[in-house]
Length: 264
Image (cartoon, rainbow, N blue to C red):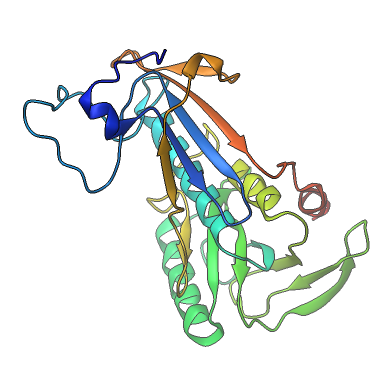
């Protein structure tokens, strides 16, 4: 038996939503109730559920900020896994060229630079700004495009070259080629958005480029909720509970990227 009422609207609403990615990975959300509605359907008034039906689960901790962070992490993961990026980059700022602590000034040059990269180098990018311990701003991210990289002469411990990105005019840069499972990189890049993360430019991340994909295909179906072996989160306001799973290719930490970052 399903743990929710399979009434007439059960043909339209489902309790399971799966995001499907090109490499076969699926990120699945399970709910104790059928709240995910198929596109293209409108129920007559007699069949509509009460107004508390939601198209997607809200924050499981009843904390709006935590909910925003989770949504940002999900969006970053989607973009990283839907698009084929070539390099993991770190971009710092030279105090002689820009005030590294001024978010508005940094945001301005970042947008200007990457709009130019998009036009000149057909760039795609996903960048996450972060504060150093002293409060200065720097960026981590993923890029692709017709960039002319320069070998820095340094190598990772496994012998891979570490490049510089001379097109970045406002400070030091490093770039390493992305290898291995794309899902590893997608998971790795989301670590920069944590519960303690603060919006620096009024947004958690920057992403752009021609034909950049942002939203994966969605599958809706029904699942025996109690049989899902995953941690459960409950929304106190609605009384609904949720479970989450990532299925498909095994996702592990991208140790090479982390190793390079720690050596900088």
